[in-house]
Image (cartoon, rainbow, N blue to C red; front, top):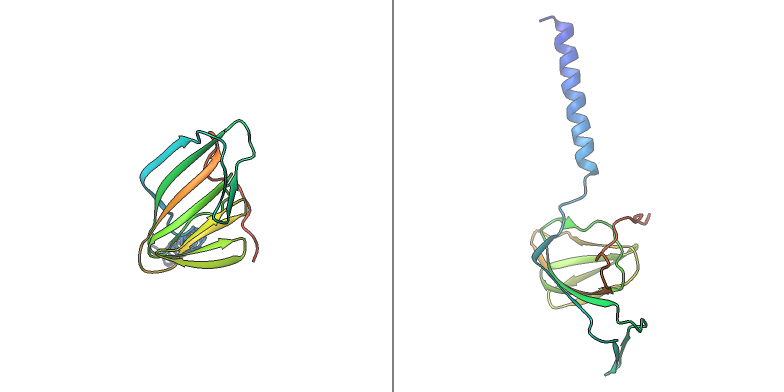
Length: 156
């Protein structure tokens, strides 16, 4: 084999390796994992709660809402893609630590804390070396997908 062919072959291998590294750097971190499936049920009546300082109501008189519960695992060094939700989501951190970015505002939550997501573009990240387990309770229009990934990440 000639020296020229050897050098050309080495350059092709180097170019492929570098393009593979560049591609790997553009990948999102590991994704969250749904544990135990979802439990979904129609909200049987119009929600109208005014109790102990909590005001929560559905404006739709047709009771066209569902409640969905999920148990979600965020492995170490993982995140969700940027997304929005219809309705709202209450999230409880059972284990570990996560950072919720609501737009460009990060807030860190640990086991025993909870937070909500409603309408804004956000993501959840686990930047620790340990898994995080979350429980999410969604209240969404009946039949709606739980999240919309067709959003633009904010430029923070």
